[in-house]
Amino acid sequence: MLRHEVLLVLALSLGASAVSSLIDFAGVLTRPGGLGDSTATLNGSHAPDRPWLDLAWQLFGIATALVPVALVAHLLLRERPARGALAGPGLRALGFDARRPAFDLGWGAALAAAMGGSGLLLYLGAHAAGASLTVVPEALPDVWWKIPVLVASAVQNAVLEEVVVVGYLLRRLDQLGWHPHRALLASALLRGSYHLYQGLGGFFGNAAMGLIFGWCYRRWGRVMPLAVAHALIDTVAFVGYALLAGHVDWLPTA
Image (cartoon, rainbow, N blue to C red; front, top):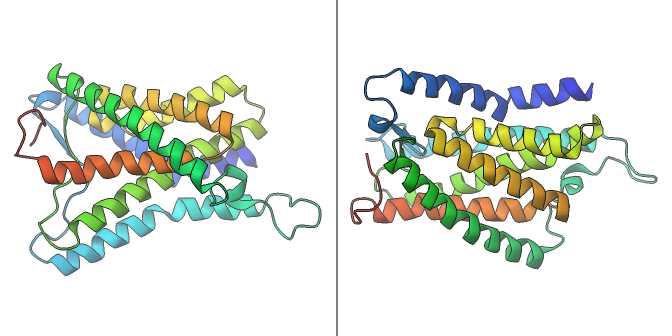
């Protein structure tokens, strides 16, 4: 039952994204020009000339992307409850709660600083070597809701990935009897695979990030610092691109 549950959760979320990224990567490799002439847009417009309709689509996409997190919370609540409890531990079992705000914010910021800087250098190096597409973090129109939506998108990415790929997946693989190192590797490779649409640099960079985040989760028993770090990294990437694109010569643009 647990094995089937894991497969279904991944098929409804980041496992499907991994397959989609693999297909997209194959398409890019077989396209004239290859990786060097291709772009990957992370936050694009759905209705460029109709800002209110575009906003509705943006909010709809963010909300529906979090449904797998709600499913994971439901499944964890259905676990066998502790003596005297009415339900299972829910997301608290993954350390996704507000019980330790100073710890979560402090370590989250430290992780973001370390991973964000090294990730940017890896992307720039991979792009220069032709191993990465040109990643366009945002291509939204200049409207009043642009920055709030970019921040919301960053938070959504962080919550979805850290809850599902780190906390939930590692918990279930432990319960299925996987060796901790094997489970950690599987989580990291999954993270890398659904970033493959960014090219080989995106795959290896995010797989390395997955190993580090998974190790931190094993050490701390909490997903929240990882979600904080991920949200900060993506916020800086999305908002920073919106502010800097076209104004600095070191940042690749489409």
